[in-house]
Image (cartoon, rainbow, N blue to C red; front, side):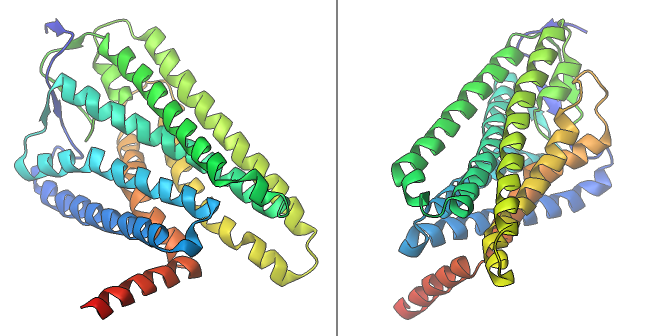
Length: 309
């Protein structure tokens, strides 16, 4: 095979059996619209209700925005390939998809750490909380997270853009990810593999350390609260965040904390479906189904719309 620095690829998708494509198409399309609707409703509820203009809900709105964009980065191309049977994608299109995918993965990672710190400040330092988490500081934390995510993702993408690949190669995945791309390269990818494991590892481990440390202090503070009701209220908002943390890191770490040169298994594809489709779809429902403030806001919005009609 010839090698090229800008070849076209073919996304082989989830299965080589065409009879399963219709099933996957229905599942992906259904979850896609459900995820878009859930995240959009959460964004509207937080933006429209002044009672939700607090640091916790500000960061939650950022997470919903990231998840909304995450879904639109991966799923439309996958759904189109399942519908038409044509998974072809240009090299520039592949790198563009990977770049935005990496941005939103890194943003999820950073936001979960920032949200853990927010809960720590609220529970462990309630009197100082308004001074620690001012609107300006919240915006700075979000802006820095976006900046870091874009810079790191640009670096990943530049690493991949310098490689040579065999022409007309099939990517054994439903989107352009670094691991299958490195396996297809005919260049020496040793340095790229080290860098593309090290950076996600540093970001991921740093975020997990921040989350674990924050919740260590939170649980210690809650244990000292004398009343059971007080403990329940203190941990109420944390339970939603911990569910999202578990969903995200259990699948992402299973995929990315392995050398890219290892074979790409079906387990990696299943994990990828979880963090690219299932988790962004579930996040708004995890935060809203048992959250009285969000449900009250949504009821008020729906009531206003009905009254206007």
